[in-house]
Amino acid sequence: MKPHWFFILLSVSDAPRYGTAIQDDVRALSGGGVRLWPATLYGSLEELVEQGWLEEIADDERPEKISGRERFYRITRPGRVALEREATRLESLARVARTRLALGGA
Image (cartoon, rainbow, N blue to C red; front, side):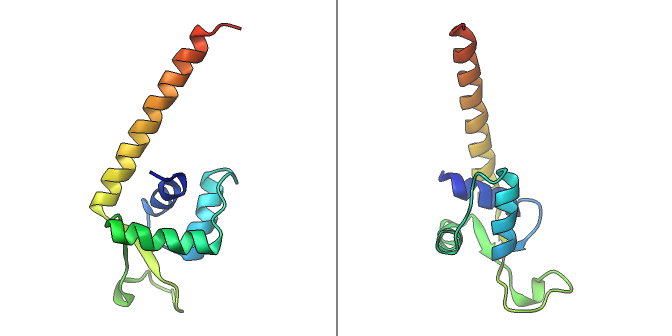
């Protein structure tokens, strides 16, 4: 999974968000390490919808007190499964790295 996809899915895993809110949340989640420029963000959102991992929320399902033209996205069940698999894969890689580093000595 592309790293920025991981962070986008993570961003919407707890609540639906619109584009710039996802952008800001990803920056916060990554400690500033991942910055999504508009072309990358919106291209990725389209790709994630095509993958079936995100879905756009219909106007009548939008969070209360939100007006305007923002397009809200939420994670789908397959998206949640993909996110969980990627988190498990990353945990496994981190374990391997820690073990290897511990064996390497000084």
